[in-house]
Length: 439
Ligand code: PLP
Image 1 (cartoon, rainbow, N blue to C red):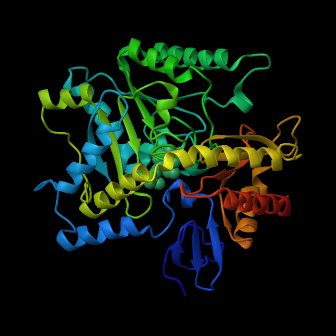
Image 2 (cartoon, rainbow, N blue to C red; image 1 turned 90 degrees about the horizontal axis):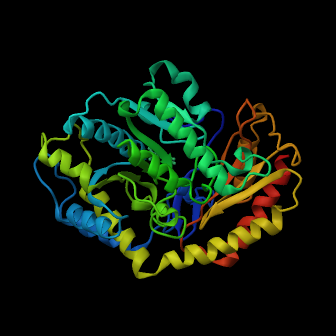
Image 3 (spheres, protein in one colour; image 1 turned 120 degrees about the vertical axis):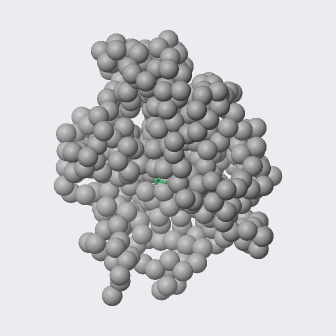
């Protein structure tokens, strides 16, 4: 009898015993193609020998040193690497153990930044509906995944939410994508005016939406317009690239393709590729300088931040991605995946939308293609698709729709960056079978 308090108590889990390349094997000897990298984590697949060697070497010298006593060479080197490749203006890196911690840190850092520069009256954070920033209380508050959030509502800090950039459901008939993006930026401006521009700390958004809405890219010009709105009022722009960042969309950072640089950016999953728990906040120079000129103490910290073993994993993962030019493979195989999804689901009566960028693609399932009406979420279609996919040796990452019909079930496909075209063909074939078997 299991003593692990599993995520779902409604079913039994297979026991994963080994992983090689894009495949995980269970204790019954069944292989699963990891077409979602877990939750868009395992960007190098499993058991990459160079990453394992770097981790072993780090363990042989030092596994842990508390960061209130020491820094380490491996944390410094990883920070150097990340800053060298970061969007314009980023000067420092604050390490954490995962995505939610990175979000909590970014929110607190943003708030303390304004205390440091003498604007302690700023207190509002604005996020977007249909977003996910993590399961800790601050992250749940600024995010807007209804199912994950609803029962904890009494514990959540107050946060504002504006419309997501959700072309499939949000763009008006006849409206151009560009005009849609500007309309959304105007909504942010209106919200800031309503709250009082000098009371707002930050706007937070996933550059490409992931866990709640499935690989949703913003309309062209949207993020540039958002950046302008934030700058006009001295508000910080926090981009959450925990899921969509670190190469997943074909460039190291998704915001490179939007032509904007954030003040704070959260990264995690692909940073360590699942070899160790690691996340980080990339910090713009002006934010760092406020602390440096001010109290010289960010009133924060976690026991495992900057963990040497996690930093060694992160450094090795990032080194392999560059050395093997894997972003070129993300672009090429991402295009292949998009094409195969289009060919397979383009005329499917229950697939309303196919979207994404790079190796970060999704399909949205609907009851009716014409009206875009989602299936009743009580059917738990996403869970059925996941189970049918697992029965066919395929891991994909589905999420449910909302009871108010503002979103359908979707399935996220985010394979490791080492995936080849043949494996993608198998992924799409098995996914098509799983979808049809679930409906
Ligand atoms: N932010 C985004 C965009 C995410 O997708 C996630 C996790 O899926 C998180 C934050 C939270 O990360 P973690 O699960 O590592 O706490």
